[in-house]
Image (cartoon, rainbow, N blue to C red; front, side, top):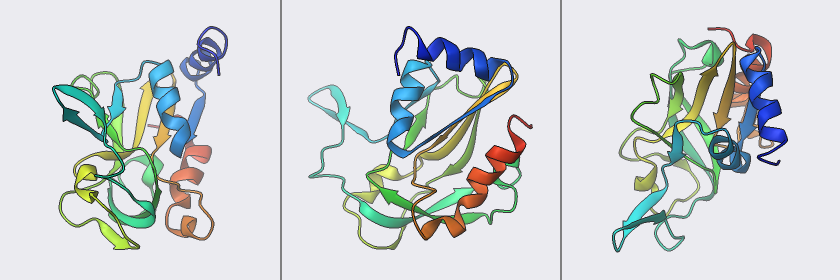
Length: 173
């Protein structure tokens, strides 16, 4: 993906009504390149500088984490209000203050408190109140960012609707 050639093509596709989906590790490069109002939530301030949380403080190498879901949004139709998502070194999102005005909807998020449902997690508190799945309206289309691995092996029975709804509904409101 190049900033000069690929990103303008993706932006034109989305603004004309297309939908771009990014899952897991592909999300940061996309939201940064497209200048979406989303940031990495897994950061901390160290000596006055914001940095990614080091693995000594935060490490989830493949566990089921509980997410809250807004199933009134077309992307989450058919989902229950909570879902286990497969988290494996996955990104989590923090929305910029103007995110709602710039067309961002939080579809799924991590609440506060105990989030681990199965497996183990070191420093799960860093996920508290961060977004797991967001949809960004751009022109007639949208960009959907999935932090957790919603398509990972057997786990997707609980999260496939998030993918299939995006493919089916496209840019539906």
